[in-house]
Length: 365
Ligand SMILES: Cc1cc2nc3c(=O)[nH]c(=O)nc-3n(C[C@H](O)[C@H](O)[C@H](O)COP(=O)(O)OP(=O)(O)OC[C@H]3O[C@@H](n4cnc5c(N)ncnc54)[C@H](O)[C@@H]3O)c2cc1C
Image (cartoon, rainbow, N blue to C red; front, side, top):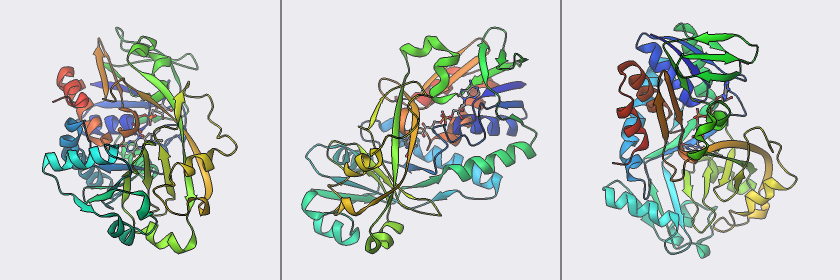
């Protein structure tokens, strides 16, 4: 079977990987380089974690996500996951951190609750006076996205995938199974998979009723010297509590200390507003005090903008019609399922059972 995959973020790379392993002839088209720093998958690192609060279908699917990553590490001969465990910090009653803890307890998963003083003793960057409790779990870590993309690209090339970088698709024909490139060339295949991230509406505009594109930014911080060591051995922080929807990736394996906040986003086309604003890094940083002590002592090393696509309820979007399958990741949490998403798309395309693929990705059971 010949398959064209449009977009080489984690979804497209993984789809190409899994299809190639199953004997398909794959062409992978990417408008920029691989990895593309403009893509949602192109930043230094992303979180993987069990906790999912209200979205328990995804909580249960984490085992399969880990299994798929293990299959990938075996193929590429390197593990690009640092198992740090994760931490949530609650500041106000009923905040998201509390929901995450409750979801873990309800699912019977390992979680240890810490009183504020104990939390600040173990994680000295926390301000005990501003938190209600913290909770730690071993089931989480840091996926090293840029290393994953580089290793996957090497594996795909060795295994016969035709990767075309700097090759933008401008039109897709679902009935014919063909795509048109920016240079006017047309390519056809038995099936087309579109994993174009925030750019998907440029190719399939009718999906605007399902998908909305947002622009956000994250800040890379320089902690005070005396807290450096604590940060280097910290778990990922899935939620800092309160109302900012804030998360933190510790500096591991050569990456930086990164903070991002769910409230820091607005609707925007994927290529617009991609230069960080003056003072934006400090604005993002300041969302984190509380619960972090001495927040103004953290320097801003870099600010990275990003575009991603949301469904209304933040579940994955998947649709197949004719010779076309479109998959869009679920907002700010789609990377961790990347390898398994690729396996599911490949299975759906090769078996023709797109419904099973959709049900798994939407994770409503
Ligand atoms: C700030 C931020 C933090 C996040 N944190 C986490 C996290 O901690 N954990 C987690 O699991 N997830 C996280 N996510 C979500 C995760 O990053 C995304 O869900 C995931 O990376 C999306 O992968 P993708 O392959 O679908 O899209 P992308 O990575 O955006 O890839 C799409 C690719 O398609 C290419 N493309 C688009 N259009 C065309 C075209 N016409 N022709 C050719 N190529 C094209 C693009 O250039 C791009 O490379 C976060 C997202 C953001 C923005």
